[in-house]
Image (cartoon, rainbow, N blue to C red; front, side, top):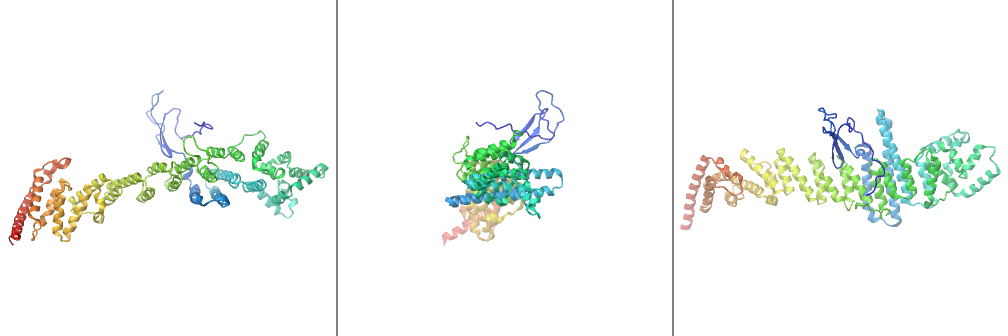
Length: 610
């Protein structure tokens, strides 16, 4: 197992004294709950808690920044677009497209940085202003690193053009040079401007310097040896700078913002055709010369140095340690992987670096109430562990509204995540039952293909019918179709509603046959038989004989079974049957059945005689 690069940072929780109290914590997918406990091994526990709060510690707080959310949203589109065009990219067009994608990422960072800068200026309290300014610095460093990686790893600039790219890189990130140059050139007499001699390199002549460097170098060296500028220290100093004299450059150290500004200036005047393979040598010596042993390199210095050494994995590792979230390393690694630069690097626990970082970033997005939708696509493009991770995270999304639940459900259905679909439908069905929305509950239980829950909801429908004498959600019950076969109780509910429809349409013979089949097929719950027999009364009292002799005998048998309270295996309600039967209803049913039997015998005898 790899060793830690350093001690992990300590997170102080306000109001919690971990030296006197033991802590209780519980891990979650993106956060941790922390609280004090009253347990103490050494001393007797205090009766009054020192901190009566439960704290939520989040590992990635950047997802809650409104401005950074724009960064996440914009970069998501670039990421998905890159995955989709990957198969179409070949040869030179591939390299050009990858450079374009990299520039798109950088433009998003810069736009976000500009908005953060404006927020820092407009901040009403100093604390917010400092926080925004800190974020500006982080975003600036991210764009600086990304730009250098773009030059070295994606564009792969050769000797010659490499220095031009590095000059643009420094100019883009060292704004003071451009602003100073604009002030000097904008004055009436630039040569007499107070900052004229403070310009370490006039960027207006960079191309000319590159083309004629050898000639100028020889000219400067000859003039310096001849003492041409001995009478003018500033001109002599400028001549030394043109020759790339390190001591002369370091004398102007206060005009150079940092060591990599010094590096590019040094290369411009001494090695304008530097080869990529030699960059690390000049970078290391420039860092050592610029710092001069007075201070240690910062994390940003280490990252840039790793890039100049063409150590991609060290760049990613250092960025992972230094930056506060996974956005940067996840997207940069993905882009470098598309450049075929990370194919040989697998992590010791199975997944490759690209997938590991994308999984971590997507997990952080799932901690946010709306950004989780972006995380789905990142999981989709992780072929090894993405599917499993998505299944685990999507089950933890709080289904606070039905609209959100439908979004989650649609995502699961599109990816054929059967178990998750069933789980979500069950949750929604349970919520609907608690809110007494039986139609919605039945619909969700059918969608979940949950026979047990469908039976429960069907029983609620039947109970409501017994209490109110009518059905709710008729449209749903009338259009169950094949779904009614999910459970026997649901089948009974659908068929019983069909019986009422036949009766309402005066299709009495169809209604009588269906009613009898519901009772004799054992599909109807026994506790509902008295209701079914009562429903038969209007049919028994019709002028026309509806039930045949055989059907009447079946009804009589069912009535006597009901009256005798014969227990039926597996039905816990059998013992309460006597409580459900009213003597008046029994007598009315017996009388009606006897009268119908007599009429049916007479009718059938007359038909046989004729």
